[in-house]
Image 1 (cartoon, rainbow, N blue to C red):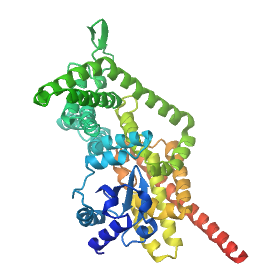
Image 2 (image 1 turned 90 degrees about the vertical axis):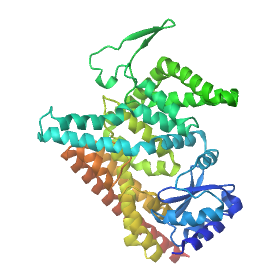
Image 3 (image 1 turned 135 degrees about the vertical axis):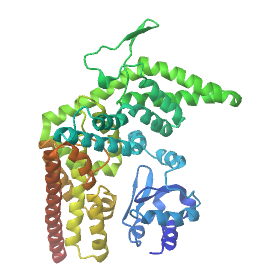
Image 4 (image 1 turned 120 degrees about the vertical axis):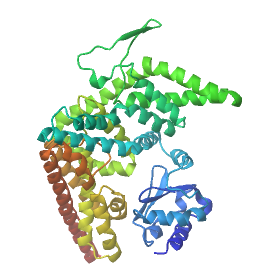
Length: 470
């Protein structure tokens, strides 16, 4: 594959350099923000060597090349398009893309940008918790040994300082100083505030401030309180900076921002955010417990459609909230999402065996295995959605697999990983949890495979009858 020639051809097919506002790439896709997407020749793009699919989503036109390939194509594309040569989405890409989104899609994208960078920390904490649990369960060492105490510190730290991590990431997303965001997270987890993770039967102290009683309880392990607070902080910082002379900006802006936001965090926003988080968790747990398999069938069947809209990115915040809630402490949503993802892989595998198109066959097999590893874009956009019936087959498999993992109460102790990599955050919760996850995996893939074969055969038979009638 000639990467320079491919990059030049891509530039031509998306309307030329003058049609590009800005560009970047992620792990698998070239992401373009265009002036006019009607100028794109999508059919020619999808026939281009190395392209697994192309689609418009989240205010961006995205071209799937796959892991590794996209980096090499972008390296040649960037100078031709006149954009910066870096691997991350710069702020101007995010702003340009966000301007094209409706409010709900913009919210989903913002939440994604806040929580996706935190995935490594959450996954590490989940695996450490699993290791600690195994040591305790099998009695490998005594409960008061140094290794147990150290692992307990290592595994809980990510959730204890979660508001600081969110504060930094959210401030960067909302256009504020990320270090001020971290400070706000630090205020909300200050040692003077009673840690809710160790609350037990203890009653927090109450401080009287301007006639208001403020409970001195911290926000360790919470999500929505700090998220809302940092959003407000960003607005305050922007307004203060706008009204402050440049010579005084370094002194006045941080001082006023932290002072005002700190009071609001502990008096107003923190308690409201806590109620919001508990309300969302209560609703999810209610549906999970009351509707059980039906909820799994519904969510598993619809998840791939939600992925197309881009709204699935907002789920990270909800999943983090479930993990942070001490009364829940597990992620029962991610196994459902995983079933939907691997089912699309099963549908893609069926296409590989059913199709006679050489190029589609060459694309379907690696795309299917990519879905089994948790990366679904190549198989969804490059294979299943283009053909239609395989996408429906994948949705059927996702529904059946989702119903099974809900029935058997499969859960994870982190978020961000699906497919085969998810085994790492499912296994720590017990052997039965792992076995049921693997069974659900097999059910989702097999159901999607069979459903896709049936749908494609029915479609081919119908097409043959139409041709004979003509």
